[in-house]
Figure 1 (cartoon, rainbow, N blue to C red):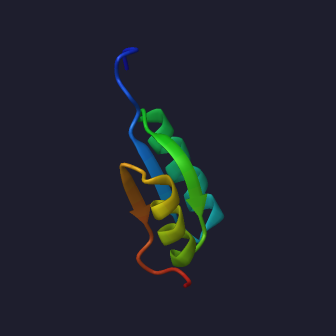
Figure 2 (cartoon, helix red, strand yellow):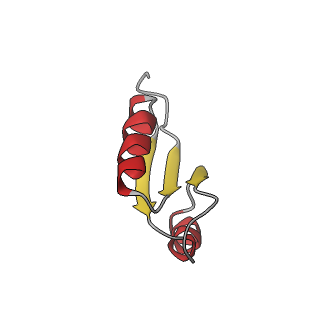
Length: 64
């Protein structure tokens, strides 16, 4: 990634700690900036509104 390239910002929503860790590592290695990882749907929505990331990675079966 050259100095003119801006990293895409991502929020991860997942209720399993190990999966969050693996996703964070993979996304960071691929050049993304994981700006927040949250454990439930409500926090995912709140984080999306607050941080306005480029995209979200969401678990389809998690609390709230």
